[in-house]
Image (spheres, rainbow, N blue to C red):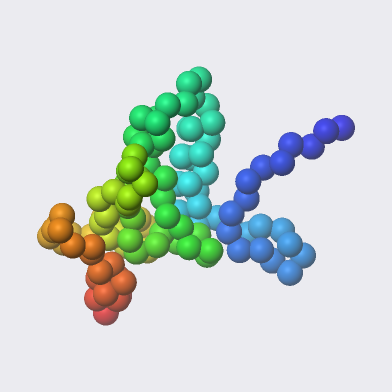
Length: 108
């Protein structure tokens, strides 16, 4: 019997079995499955499919960014780590948002 390998994200237990996935890892799995299911894979497909930036525990990294064609990072924004919900803050296209600071202010 042939076994299919599946991507698993989340913390590993002592016996190396994955525990429950975090919200970001679930969103990442959905994005990767969507990309894999596309019949044709163009640059536009990759640019239009949001791929979340997760930490090793399955939470969203405070700063999320759009990809860009020229190799540079696209527009960035700050999110709440557990939910991935965009934080309300003014967008300044000339600066890089300090999402670590914004994330700490939300926790207080």
